[in-house]
Length: 538
Image (tube, rainbow, N blue to C red; front, top):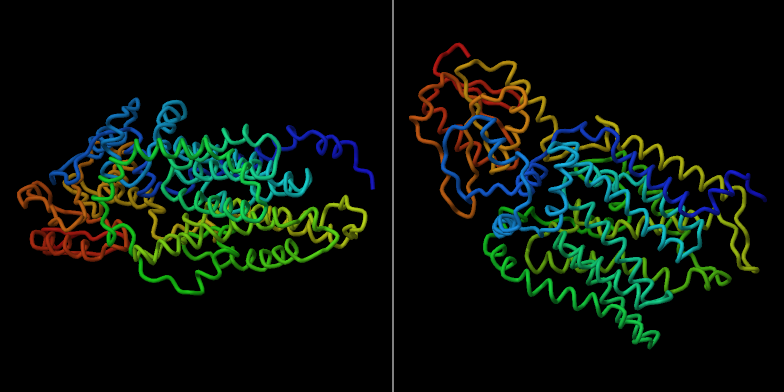
């Protein structure tokens, strides 16, 4: 059946079609970008990017919100020496911060500027996904894979978060495409240099990229053993050299970072149920996984299972198209990083790596799997002995794509079941606004939490009331004693508001409550605030 002229024009013009899909992805990620408040990790992004040095244990004193904002969050040009000094007491790599710093200067040192940086990298992931989808199943399959990736709530969610995850995904997509071309495509030596760039960028963006490299190393061994084409693997040699150079350069910083890591503080969340381990490859990279997203899972679990069956059912006449090279590559991409993370979890007794953001490096593979499955329903195969798709198959494919588009639109709406900010600092703007509307001139806000907590409060207090005083308290870290402020610092204040920053620090919260109650005997509790006063009339 002939296509309409306009549709034929889009089909034949790859740059035009892929550009439109990228713009669709970017629009979904930019829409409602500032709907939710920043949370503490995003505040850390601003703190580290602006390279304001801070000690590991600050002297407790009273500071205004404006002072906090100027000292930790105001933009300044990147200072690489300061950045490396900061990362020595952090657990991250430098590339994200190096690239983010000029972006914030151009587009604003605020929530929109921060998150739009991730939105752009997330939209650019469409390019390598299209390339790999086309290599695996043809041009139309590439379009469908790109469209699925643009619509997935998982991709949209992390494309709107002011952290380095979207950048890591971008590098994972290009590394996946380049590695495929090294093994199965033309000009493997040329693709080898792009692969070296992608894996270098990935490793300099986030440590979890090592699990992705583990998948490619193991698959390369399987490929060489099965095909005996060991010369093909020489295309990856520039990447090996680049990784060796990065390891030598970064090793001193990494050693200092590991000395500062407190596993109980950073990672230990308790054992994850065995059902979670088994189910995560099938639905987690497709849905928004932060918190409880029952509606998202309800929609995507059956879709995922159906499309997996369609993608990998055996058809003798289609072996040339969906052969070991395609299905094996995608299944290895899906399973090997997860298995490596599970092994790491049990070795380090952390049991967290496969939840939430740590499943993201396998999410492009899921986008490709779903796209190729839709291609089975949609595209008329080129092979003579293959039964072409029926109208029923095309209708099912269009229905699934339409459902995914509706879910994508819902995922950027706020509030919605897809924007569950479990254990994050959603609505902190409203909480700070409530304080500002109720506070008296002689009141003090006392923020309970780590270093990011007072900066998060200052970020939303500073534009409205620059001189509002606040006192911070740093959580106990690595066995250090709680650095509570001296009692004389509270003398000028008749009433103190204790902000319940996060629900996972009950011991520290109780310590602060007991300390304040010794000076302010009268207490009232609201949803997020504890108000302490010297007078009975609060």
